[in-house]
Image (cartoon, rainbow, N blue to C red):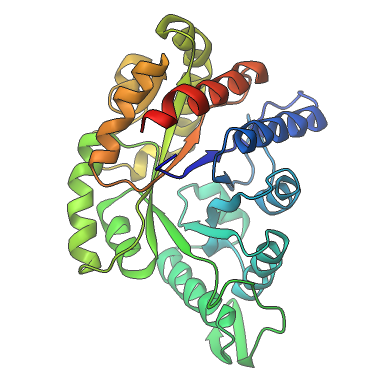
Length: 329
């Protein structure tokens, strides 16, 4: 494949479903992607999911690494402002070692008030996020770090456990709003383009990103919701109920509040799918992915399974993507 492709794990299941079975299903997706020649596997991060149980990404990715031989692993994304940066630096350094120096650290600010309230964090979210990112970076680089913050006090602190990658794993930053896109350009190694916004919105924001980046080179990874079936009708029948339910959850959680332009989620499936979801036959998927590559995307991160979907349908989607879609890109 000329374009590296990663698998974005669902990492979620409905309460009442056997969690051990849900874990086995996610690992089956990792193996299918590995056998299909995919380059990476990512897992997301949430707390207090109400109607969705959520595996935490660090132990999940450590377990997935055993199945993901030769693949990068990554957080997509880690809610950095919620945590102490020393803990983050040591935990992720450990994960980079487990992954053989193949970790990508995807970070983001998040958007759910319930998560911030649970950690006792008020209005200083952006400052906390940026301070934590700076401390993690400096600790990974082996520096002696001083900090005098309400949540972290350090005097000449230096990690004894360093990541394999120097000066540390690449940092990709998720961003939805225009200001967040500019923050990613300023602070991260790459903007991790979200799966929620339309092609028109991302095209506009990409100009903001490039200006704010000032010509600095770097990858442009894109996350997308993609489901491939033997034909368009089968793909739509298999994917629509689960994708629609996922985006209803996003709307209920307040993701709408941070979306730019008119990319809200409280809409019918057909409106949601326009320029956003890629669901269809192999030929449909090739045609829908090409405009993103023409935009300058250098890596694809695809989610092809959502809570409640029969795992065999997602495994078939990975197989079709591996054999009939990705080689054409």
